[in-house]
Image 1 (cartoon, protein in one colour):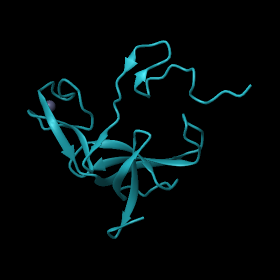
Image 2: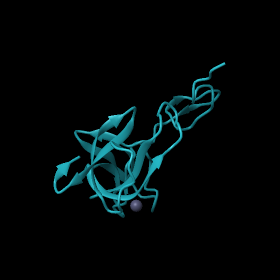
Image 3: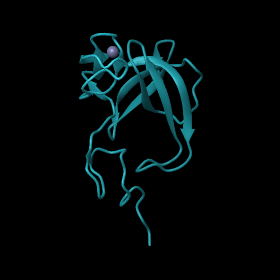
Image 4: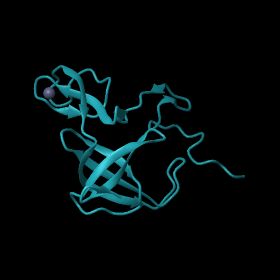
Length: 141
Ligand SMILES: [Zn+2]
């Protein structure tokens, strides 16, 4: 009997009603007019790439809606060699430090390990996850 991956198992990864559980909020960053949506603390300016949070996670101060640049530098990256949900290996992941904001997880266009600090541009969403391409000398690859 073939079972479909990720079906029938409780998960906190995806929004909506989890199997046998309560609805789970989607904590993944969103794209708003080509920028990453989130909030910024009005007290300490701490940036968060998530909307709907009630207070600053660093100082508990009030937060206001914010948008962050879609470009940044790779903090870390890897190539995943196992299936995850509906994704099939190999696929690349990177943590991206946005130029004016928080660190976000992005799916890479190519399954490659990037040098630290490699420039990336967020290009869109794939099944709710941010996708990005590398920028070399101003040219997107
Ligand atoms: Zn704060």
